[in-house]
Length: 623
Image 1 (cartoon, rainbow, N blue to C red):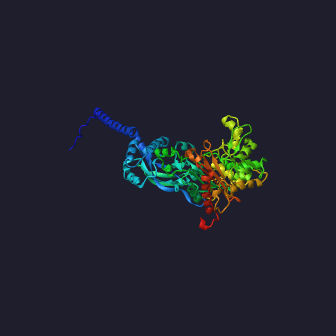
Image 2: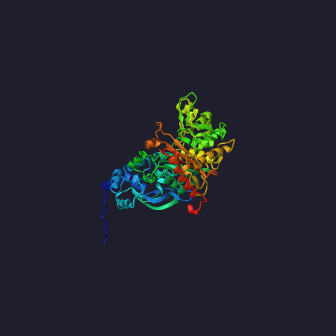
Image 3: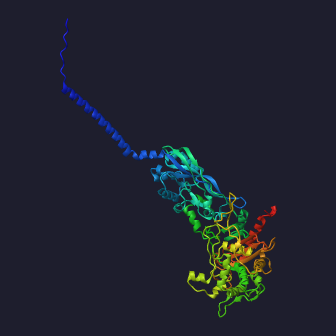
């Protein structure tokens, strides 16, 4: 059987074309839809979620975290710790991780006490730093504060509790004007400090030795490379460059003598210094009343600061460095030395003291402190009894220009260079000084009162201590300084002071030094001395000189003690001991003390007694 093939089909080209077109359109539509989806997602990521994703990316990065160095400690000459570092916690805010700063601060106020000044300081600093840098809000948190913030930390993004070391002044008021204090770095500090060296640091020296030796105490910052997560929490330390700690400082101050000096003043206001004239080391230095520097480290409140600032007792005022006083009769030994060296007087040349002095052709009477005068006195007795009329005539014979030139060799009218900022220059009166500063001529009557340390005279405690040290060393000068050594055992850097004595006052007749010092010995140990009451029972010889600087004029016969305290005379006393080979110079001023012999000399006696007990080589029973 023969099969026949099926009939041939005819290809429908048109139908196939229509089918292909439909499928092509469908594929193109799907492709376009896919592109639209991709573009939409890209737009969402780039436009809508860009800020959030960028922030997450920034937080998931490796950060270079500064590590603040440990600040150098400060010790006295015997190793007594004066300024320490103790562990503490501070409250910080990272601006980039805080969405609403005001809301965050409101939440924090419900947990801890925050001073409005601290809030304003925080906002000011946020504007000045990069947003990823933490900014401190509150220092020295209590354990309760730390616990409250830790419990609520999940509700406080951008808020951190950071451990750090805070400065602590172990003896508070005792060293406020010597050691000074550190405070928060402000805009003025940021402008002058090396930003890299102070990276991570929040405090800088503000006053005293903390400020003067900031470059030694601070050290240099270190750095850590930290890997952080999206929440900003550190995951691990990738690398670390440790910080370099600051230098420890060892002062020339003797803590025992410093305490004794404060106790000697009792309730009196004033200032005092004790100096070793052989090397210029300051053994003790106080300004009273004082204040506690520790609140300044944490950030003292506005009201507390205003109370200190506006106090009539001026506790913030450093009387030693910033105070200017008339030296009064304390310059009389130097005047005697000048008169002898200039050939105007001989040691045994005397005058008849009647208690009054007049310039030729002038009715003005310049009186002595003792009515009726002192009788016949020579150079030594003029010092011992502080005979004003002797020095009135000597000043006239010498003239103000020669007086200024000679006493200028002792350092008056020029800062001593003591390693504290803000030392007053003082005034060494002269014809040239008055013309330059007051545009007035000099009068002979002004020379008369300049001869007893009054009138235009202004001197500082360091200047008096330096002048007496030069007298003690018979013309040699050892610059005053507070820093004795650093932790490496090096002496104080030479850029801050000289390290050896140098000739300051040349003399033609060495025995003239003895005349001035003998007169001062008679002040304390002589039968007519103005401070003989403090010489009883001394186991060593003291050369001293009382001084009384008049603050305001008073009616004849009215006693200084009858005036209001702020109108009374300034009371001064200076001393060298032991007189035959001085190892210490003591300078004391009691504000409103009225009389150097009655108020300042007894204070100096207590200081000298303490020094004798603490000096090297003193018996154990005395220390």
